[in-house]
Length: 197
Image 1 (tube, one colour):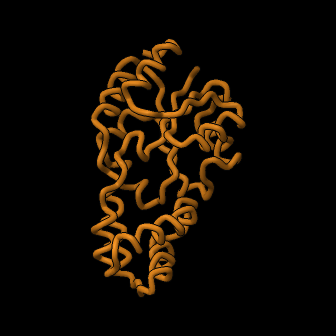
Image 2: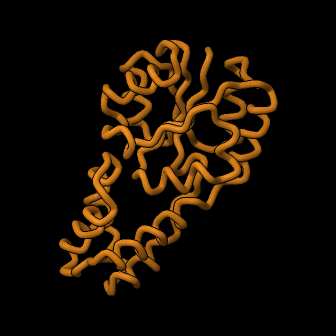
């Protein structure tokens, strides 16, 4: 296979720990905030603006969101998703050093994409593709076509790694090889079985 394609959230990154701070900045409890955060997230991942997303979150909570608050929440949110798994970074370094062709496909807003592109780990990837930039998201069939076009390859020449089974299933339906991510240690072994060291 020509390309090894990684998801980002809870594969390269840890699950965000920013929820309590986001809830505090919004003036609501964590129990109220977190469902509202996720309820509007799909539209955010598909390209809506930061302000529109946080306004939707605030609307569910009865909180008015202005430009300043949107900027604050976006900065907290982005920072929360930048914490990475060191074992995964070790795997990326080893794969990159071995000459593997690496790409990233993440359901993430454009504002996060711009921050991610500046992280040291991004240098391991030839292509970084964020759903917010292309207006579509996993597991939509269209995003796999967009990925393959971006890489200049065929679906069969991609091995996609994601922690969510729905995305693994979507990739397989589009003709990619795909594996469910559990952790870096397990995946290192699985990649060895594929002949990828």
